[in-house]
Image 1 (tube, one colour):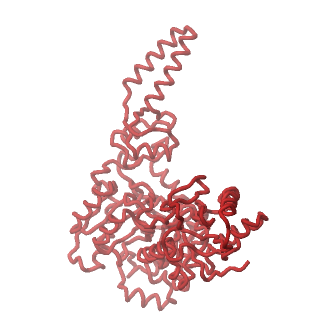
Image 2 (spheres, rainbow, N blue to C red):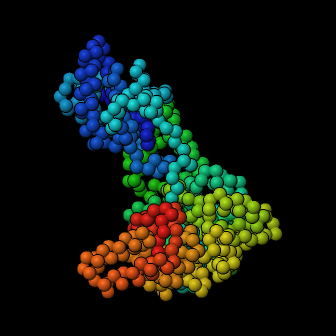
Image 3 (cartoon, one colour):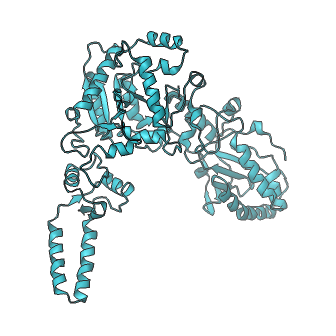
Length: 561
């Protein structure tokens, strides 16, 4: 069977992949109906065997359309390296072979005639005089317009939380090393408007550093350092990758450009694809090699992935050696000084850029950061951000003499961040007044000098708590205070309704046994339940209890412990 692969395009997500178009001609209505019924019986097995969302059949012509199933289309928009062969070639070849193997002459004609052309080649949707099309998945006719590809927009995708906004924000590795933090910077407030308009951080690059980079100092977001474990995870289930330097990973503008190409292909406009055959990488974006994220020039200049705490600490010491000035890690070199020095030691990016880089391949929630550090002239814009996103992290304003001098801004931002580390109580945001487990002083630092994981270091920050589950900042103040004060076990945290049900069952048992003493105890239990402190759960609180702690609560349910 021949295959003209140069006329085939790739479509990602819900993209139309192709059709089997019969050119036999002269087929009478009875033969068409017979073939249509055969396709209805055969195609469900193909739908189950291959990554299709649905398969459609045009009743009038017995043309077959397929919609692809992709686990996470957002991952495609991030790719820098692309595979030569389009995935459509393999999908259609496999489907054609399976139809051919049935041995049925009608199905052979469907599989073989026309050599599998992409439809629609110039946009639009499948055509049928009845205005309907058969859905193999739904086992019924559906309107033709429901088959049309939906436009893809990155900003319409669901956001993910990197971690909760109550910290920690710093990592201490001991050996008198400056504390590290994780920052994502904006060079101007206009970019904050774009963030709010989109609704999230589009695959952000996060600097793991000890001082604010000069390139983006005006507004700096600090993220929870607990994500370090995820970034070091070799299994890469977290979609976070840590590198030893700036890797020149895809920018937001590149992601948006890829979004345009995705929509062209979803509409069946393959001319652009034919000119750029290397657009798509693989047919399963979860099979991902993090090294592919690194730009070729960055790889040539020493950019590599970090997968262990030992590698991280060694690389950090190298960065400090390269980027301290006069022995002071907080004194900045100018850009020319950094580049000239880097050339003198071989040109490595580690000597050029004073930070490591964490790359997220997800669309990150605007409520995720632990702190926002910003020039005080942007106060109104930051308050707008807080009100629109329900952000509950710390707010850290600072002043500068010259708002046009990025070096001064970076230095002042770094000083403000170090003050946040020592005096976090000064920077509490009104939406999240009480944070963390300590009742004495807020602790935003993970001490990893003696710990191999960020998770264990985080647990050890608050040794007085016995039942160490996290208390998110978005819990109501009453609930947070009560949890810290009483420190209940997870099994003790129940809905009032469930506790009352258990007591009533016990009461029935005592009645059946004629146990007067037991009934008296049950009476005390019911009275005690009436007097217990109770809490009405918000939607966020329910989500955390159910998803993280394994409970089964409902919104506005009343709980106690």
